[in-house]
Image (cartoon, rainbow, N blue to C red; front, side, top):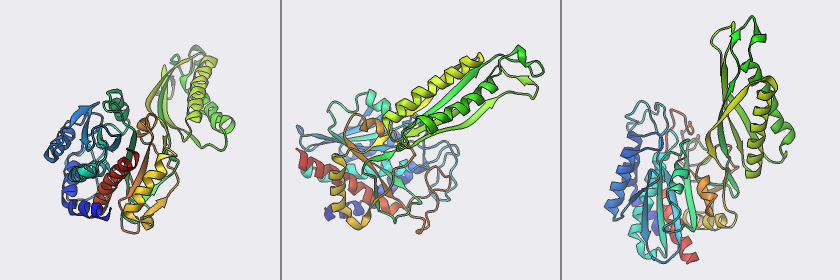
Length: 393
């Protein structure tokens, strides 16, 4: 498949052009009208008939209409922050920036769509291209699944990639984790209601600050006394807000945080005990709570049967010297929602190492990506689709 990699490198100027346009024009959330319109227009130029699904864009390539279906995924949304990269094609929007690299994902998948259309005779099945909005906490993947993404036609296997800057590996290195790839992420906001009163007469009120502090302490026992000690679990409270003055007990206060784990059973147990402890502490001190799960993402677990097969096809393309097994990340990725329903795999591709001068990682305002990795990513997408369909139809 060196021919496929050569084709991708010849396509590099076009892939870079796609990436830079998206990078300059970032959009945040699950509603990306301009990005979706741009992706749709580029796909149509290639001969596809893209259509909207759950706020995103889907296109099909029917190499063998009755064959199996592989899903290739890229997310498209940016983050609500300013960019400080200094790139000549930096964001034109002071309130949004592609600091997580989703612009590179979208460009790589557009490149793969072009490669696969140009090599349609080698596609012994069907390829479904998933261009997703709202990965950064907006339930974009869930929305697309709810709108029928995985059916009509039914998806048999799925594959995705994430760019990694400031990695420990040279540009173009494939970074894989055979089992767990990323942790779950359940973000919460808990509003504790008490009864306000003068700070000099606390007996007349119910102090929500007192309740919150007891909740904070009690929650630590989930990790220290209830967790299987062989399974990682993080329960972080990152924000506590209550009160307006030093001599007033407020009516209410709230706290926010996140729960993360690699194990779905540990996740379910932690969330159940979280709810029980919050409500129990509130009842103990006479208050009550509203619990809101602002984000719910399952752990991203690579399928144990499919992953070695896909890694084998990638290894044929890039060579063993450009493959590296790495530990799973406590970060999160909502491609997990696809992997709950369909066997598949997700990995990272290095877009620059610290040694190469790429010093800032994801969500940093100064992050930069080495565009030399773009055609490699497009070729990997195409290679995985061609090889998997040839060996499974």
